[in-house]
Length: 287
Ligand SMILES: O=C(O)CCC(=O)C(=O)O
Image 1 (cartoon, rainbow, N blue to C red):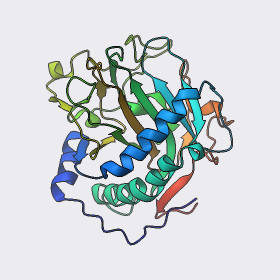
Image 2: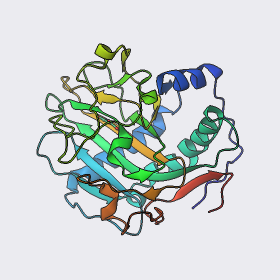
Image 3: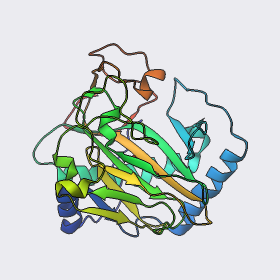
Image 4: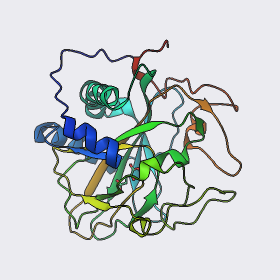
């Protein structure tokens, strides 16, 4: 399933590139139309109304439907059951991101966008809690470990509704330990340094990103981030889509689980090749 870089008129500003390189995150303003995002929102709300299965699909990409309350079970569905999501990822996000990572990466490096994970984080009104500081790559035992993620809300998210918060420049500080996202407790066997409780204490600028339904964030897999609680009376739904930007092999660590090993049977050194993780774009490499 390779996406052709169709004749899209994609404008990426030098400022966006510079911000991403310096901060490890950038807001792309007015990227979507409200009409399109409202269709995704309707499809998502219909899906979660009756969806209680936690099935792990082994033959196609899945979407994790995560209601962000401690103890809540995550439901799942196939990406193909949410065609509006599938279409947006394939025909809007991937072509843009392909141009974007090409522009932000120097030289003839092999690049790809291999779909790794799609999660909808739902923070119910007054209940959705803080999702603590973390770094995406810390949860994926793969080598090399280069990822890019996009995050966009299904309705406008202001400061009271659980916006994303980032530590600028943290993507340059290497890999950190993985922790429980609710409690900040390090997982058993974790030996890597943890992200400090307050990244501004190590000199990083911490910035909150309110977004409209039309905006999208792009962050480097190494960038530290968290999301604030939803203290408003509205539902807050954020869609996170993660990609591997280079072909990888499984590189397990003692004590570290990996969600994707439920979808694919892999041993140390195996490539992550499966219809669950399709390569949607590639450059300078053979598939
Ligand atoms: O939407 C959220 O609350 C958190 C999303 C997030 O941290 C992520 O996508 O890595």
